[in-house]
Length: 257
Ligand SMILES: *[C@@H]1O[C@H](CO)[C@@H](O)[C@H](O)[C@H]1NC(C)=O
Ligand SMILES: *[C@@H]1O[C@H](CO)[C@@H](O)[C@H](O)[C@H]1NC(C)=O
Ligand SMILES: *[C@@H]1O[C@H](CO)[C@@H](O)[C@H](O)[C@H]1NC(C)=O
Ligand SMILES: *[C@@H]1O[C@H](CO)[C@@H](O)[C@H](O)[C@H]1NC(C)=O
Image (cartoon, rainbow, N blue to C red; front, side, top):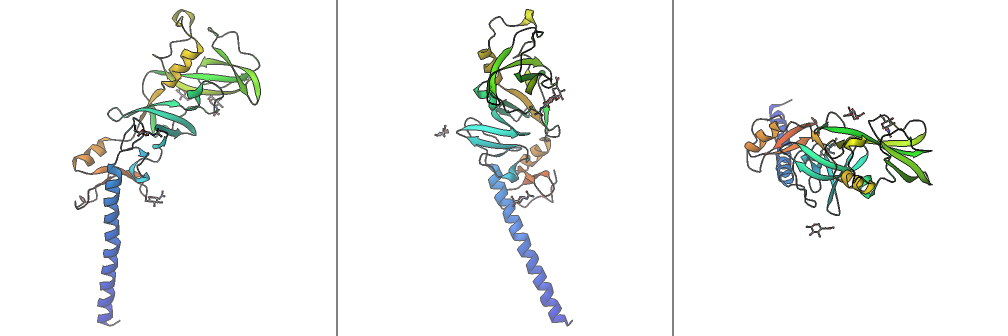
């Protein structure tokens, strides 16, 4: 190979590298401006670690996607749809309520409210309630008659009842759903403690207030990013949070969060 061809080739490689570099730094700027925007939906406005509702996917953790429907912020978690009632970044908590129960106890989506332990943890003092559906008859042994009827599988008037715990429908009933509830909102089902003015409508109202979960993304790393004028986002190649810097600002040497 003669030297001029070699020098042409090395210039070519140099130019090629420039072309590769420029678009990637431009795209970092785009991500900075895209991820600087907060989500906006009804009264909920939030940033990292959430995306959706106006924020592209590179702005948040994949599992923490918000959807906006008629100004109501919603989220799907483990195939269950929830309304997002409140987001508190300081405590990293999210108050959510099951969408199916916003219209009453019947008919439910037969899926338990379970959470990926890598992404969520429970916060307040809570307990699991199980709503049992489609029973031939509701057991008489539960202390308070927390029973209801629903049309299940096209059959009207199927008995259902509410019990403590997360141990399924049992043999006499078709299906069950367990939901965490706050102990302060739902006193124990023992007769002396039970509110005298209790009724199903009051119960359904409590259920609409939802419950809290905490997200487990390490926000301390993002505070560092904000301090150096960046915004936090999510790198879908490394599957890690990352920091995007504003246009014109030289990115600090590969800050890895
Ligand atoms: C959503 O809320 C905004 C601001 O409050 C309002 O302007 C808009 O009309 C609402 N949209 C719907 C679909 O309710
Ligand atoms: C609620 O149910 C989940 C799933 O079975 C379980 O991991 C958790 O320990 C239960 N919590 C309580 C307070 O019983
Ligand atoms: C809900 O959880 C209960 C108890 O762990 C279990 O028996 C039942 O099969 C679960 N239901 C679904 C739809 O996963
Ligand atoms: C990663 O993000 C880029 C830019 O947003 C997108 O084009 C690409 O499809 C994403 N890749 C995966 C595996 O999600």
